[in-house]
Amino acid sequence: MFKGEAVHHNLNTAFIDLRALIEHLSRLDFSGAVTLEMPSYQAEVIFLSRKRILAREYDLEAGRISQGERVLDRVLKRCELEQGQISIYRASRTNVAAYVRRPFVDERILRHALVEQCESPVPEPVILSALKNHKKSDLNLTLADELFIALSGAFAPAEFDFDCALKSAAAINADNFPVLDRLIEAIESDGAAISLLEMNIGPEILPALIRVTGHIIERLKEEKRFTTLLNRLKCRLESHFIKRRADYESLSLAHLLANMLQA
Image (cartoon, helix red, strand yellow):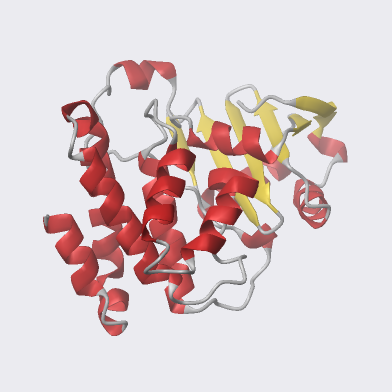
């Protein structure tokens, strides 16, 4: 569970409106997490940025650990039905990003899954937009953000500096894709916690990010010690491409991702 500077500790759910609390902290651009603890259930809502939060749950009774938009709904409903303790922890954006990149599995599962398989990928961060429905972003930016999440998530279980690798690949390709200069600035400021949907950036970021991803794959192929990381990355990218292939085809970009995955 998330730990940081304790702002409030062990608040009783009977006196706290968790939904209102999350919305309030989002408006304050809070960085950190809200945790919920019950006898057989734990959850955390992690604040990555003003409009980007991540909900995770550890259901000990059901034997389930998961994250996503449905998880947030379950957390809110659980809080209404059962008493528990809510704590608020503050942390820097850098520490929050580092925590999110860590493997989201318990130690028992990790011991039996040292080599990750496509059937059980590392869960992806989910953009929740602070519990509100925002206008749908440009398809290019939506795909770019999802691609970025798939890319960064692949590095979560690895002892590998993702921010450094991404900045290096972006810098090498910035001459052909000037938009990557903006990406480098954002990474230097907020690390992997950035949301491309929130950046005032053009649709050209998508083909640029595809090229950056291809460059990272090429570098990983150069050393055998990165084989597991490479396989995990390609697995996540293939899953993203299968789900979004029609959208890539509508933008005439499907061949770029397909060629990258087949190389």
